[in-house]
Every structure is written in C-alpha cells, then in structure tokens.
Amino acid sequence: MLTRRNFIQLSLGASAALAFPTIGSAASPDWRALALNRDRNLSLIRPDSKEKATLCYWTQRGGWNVEGYRQACWLLRDVKYSAAVNMDTGLLDTLFIMQMWLATYGQKHDIHVLSGYRTPHHNSTLEGAAKNSMHLYGRASDIYMPGVSPVLLANMGKMLGLGGVGLYAKRGFIHVDKGSVRSWSS
Image 1 (tube, rainbow, N blue to C red):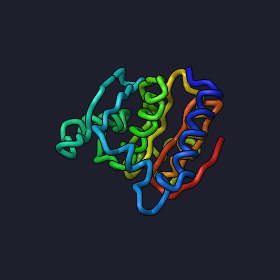
Image 2: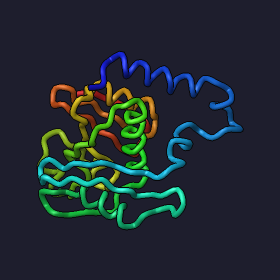
Image 3: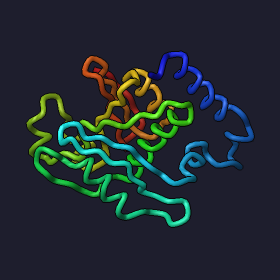
Image 4: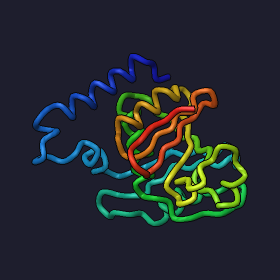
C-alpha cells in the first residue's frame, strides 16, 4: 500500500527534479517527457466487464503499437452501451506515468477503470455529469488503484499538471482528463 510517507518521498523526488536547473532548465527536456522515453505499458482492469489486460501502446523503437492502442481504447469504452472511440493518447500517457511512477518506487498496481469514453446518452443519464464532459470525447477516465489512497492518487495527478483531476474520496476514485489543468473534489 502506498502510504503518506511513500507519497511524500515520491513528491519530493518530483519536486527536486523540477527544482534542479540541470533537469528543469529550458535546455533540458521536461521530466514528464523523459518518463515517456521508453516502452509504454499499461495494466488495466475493467471491474464491470471483468476484463484485464497488460498492453503496450507505444514502443521506444517503433512508436505507436496499433494493437496495444486498440486494446486500451476497448478497455476504456462505454461498457454499458458497448461503444468505443479512439482515446486521447495524452490520457494514456498520463495513466502510464502515474502507473510507472508508483512502480519505480516498488508500488505495482493495476489501474481499475470505472469509466472512460461515454456516449452522449449514457452521460445524460448520470447524475452530476458535466454536459460537455471530457468523457464524451475520449479524453477522460475515472480510475482507482487498490492499495493507493484516492487522495494520494489525485495529488500525484495534480503534480503531473497534464490536465484536470477530480477527487471523489468518499466514492474511492479519481477523474483524470486532458482538458485544461484544474482540480476539484466532491
């Protein structure tokens, strides 16, 4: 389980990387870009459909792996209405960085996907769903990782600064999207 102490250590590492001129200067790549300079694998579980996949959607040598990308899009589909779209590749990268960051510190966790793409009809039936939700465009996912506090996961998402992060602590999950950088809690 990722404890508060482990998360603080992770946070300090990221903060230090941003603070040191050799890493944070304009002449050197962004630490997030460095994190993406490798094969990009995701371990995803879709609890409502009982599907699980470990997939590689991008390889350092060959670039985009179409089969892995399609698998990710399928797992992030609207399960209720059996509709899939091409998911935002930046969203996949955000999920990858979060999963990889934890794994770097010995915390290997599958990402449990509660929601990815939503059809307009499905979105309209959900209480509290934004009318122009990023889910409608394949640019958002609601996730949790067993053993990782949603608060810590949301803080990690905010530190990445790659899009929106919503914390739903009482319901045990977070929302990540590729919209503007912002955060909220409910």
